Amino acid sequence: SQQGEEDPQALSIQEGENATMNCSYKTSINNLQWYRQNSGRGLVHLILIRSNEREKHSGRLRVTLDTSKKSSSLLITASRAADTASYFCATAPTSGTYKYIFGTGTRLKVLA
Amino acid sequence: KAGVTQTPRYLIKTRGQQVTLSCSPISGHRSVSWYQQTPGQGLQFLFEYFSETQRNKGNFPGRFSGRQFSNSRSEMNVSTLELGDSALYLCASSPSGLHYEQYFGPGTRLTVT
Image (cartoon, rainbow over all chains, first blue to last red; front, side, top):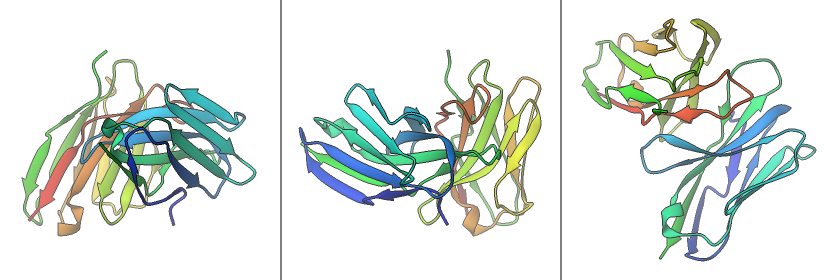
């Protein structure tokens, strides 16, 4: 099964509203990252949060990490039509295996 | 710095054929990972190379293979193509792996008919 599961699977909001998406994972991690993917294209790295960090900001993005609950959330404030994309979380496990595990993604649609 | 490049961008092959995809990482990056993305299975890890060595491999059959050259460029090969291999194949590079963000290329869209 997927290490990361995003919730919700799809989200539709109006421009200017905030969008929150969540990611849950199963094993201990070194770090967690969020990526954006515009339709059928490569992924763009948004933010990396390490296991010893609880919150991180980057522009209109705010990421939180709760290692006790094995969950993370991505908040996009004052959303724009250009934020329409799929968002994925990726976890880097501490097991020593050199692979990221991607979640199933949240499809965000921002209506102008 | 130039980003990650992948060639070709689009490819149409017939069942039973083989295909080779190429990835050039960002200059200085030594880790290259490959992923398969399909609507049904999402993003699945294929393998990761670091300094010409495969460090990890996902759960794909032996028809999927890869290699990395001394200049960090990487190739992946799929032999005996099946219809289910139709997917977007993404390559990502990072300085050394798990502790850094990955930079993705635009992908190669493979269609198997």
